[in-house]
Length: 107
Image (cartoon, rainbow, N blue to C red; front, side, top):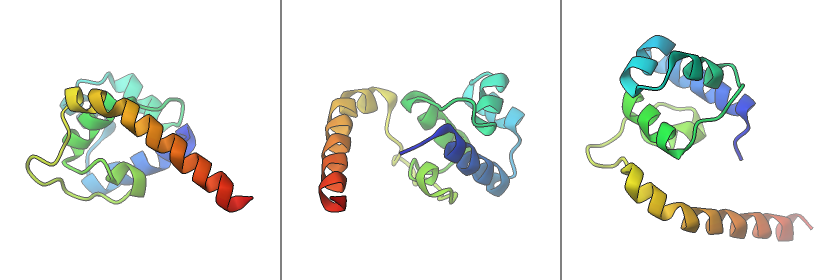
């Protein structure tokens, strides 16, 4: 699970690997530069739509935000915001199942 602290570490890694500045990411995504700074400093987390815009700006897959490794996206592999919104209930349910399994295994 993401916390703002571990997201900020991942975000910093992706910035370094991409050789982009916070300002360049802000310009590419349309996300305010202060919000980008909050991601970098661990004060806030991006939502799904922002993650997709960040991935597009970095030219990486969404999985890069899990691993911290800049994996270039393949044309057409990024999800559209509308499709992701439709998938949110499924993702939430999968998260619940994973949490239950983790609890069961660790008990």
